[in-house]
Length: 394
Ligand SMILES: Nc1nc2c(c(=O)[nH]1)N[C@H]1C(S)=C(S)[C@@H](COP(=O)(O)O)O[C@H]1N2
Ligand SMILES: [Mo]
Image 1 (cartoon, protein in one colour):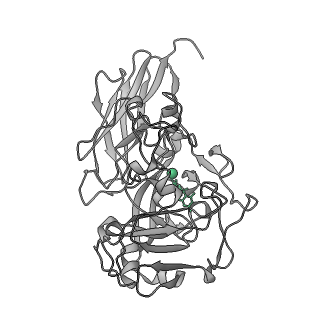
Image 2 (tube, helix red, strand yellow):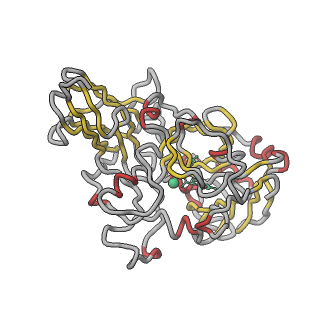
């Protein structure tokens, strides 16, 4: 791990924006207020959620930093930043979402274990870097292959941060080789975020970005890439980030019965309103939020209701200014969220609801009970906020 160092305590953490809502101080886990998410299509770095499992690593000398590429390949080698910078550079807009986004709301139906998040453990950034498919080709693994010449079927990403879940070992996870070598999957080794050098919280000097997949697979502070026959056996792949049915609890759980979660399901949330809002009568309400689906599936529709889900109107959707959003069209960013908007009159105290539909016709579930799982992941239930019409002067 030349050039990259993992502190064992929290004395060398980077500076952070004071407006972030901190869900855990050590390790640092924080999200912006929801209103920050709908201020712009691309989320500013300082307001992008931060999800760490240990102290943030330090780079003392970037020239000494290298990633070791090893495992089931013929010629294992160290790859330096200068080697990565020589490869074609791609800038890919991709929404990163923590599988635990909206966990706090799920825990209200039944208790779950994990860091509590409101609706902002999600952000949209333009990631700049080399394609993993190009990197692997340098090591004799052809594009679009599901098995390397030496028998590898998975690509494991290993960091150096000390995580208590790994008994002080590093964060690691893997993705299938077929995804890693597919240029269309846009898996990146990213060194830039929104046109700037990646900052420490987000993985400086180099991180993986796996678009369309839960954030947990986008390993930060990359130390090595290991080509392996079976998927990663680490904690975060085998004992976490799996979706269990509502019948499974901590007494009867068998982790081996489920696959590690990869793609995330269709999701949306209202960001221009808090959970409870006091509004004067006769005022138009502007409903704004985000909608996104996993696997590169575009957003077909966002429905908004001002009567708790009895009747619906369709919201307008946008990504980039001046370009109409067409789901599944080459003009749109396939890995990125859309922001939606609807102007409504709300005559009486009510519940406002949003639900999105992706291009496969997948719809968000009506409530969290039906998707409840003990780790509280993937809460994609209809997002609801209360509006109280108050005639009194508050
Ligand atoms: N090395 C390392 N990579 C990591 C993590 C981590 O704790 N350590 N957290 C993962 C999780 S669960 C998420 S959701 C994303 C968060 O990325 P961000 O902090 O840039 O938003 O990073 C992933 N990559
Ligand atoms: Mo996450």
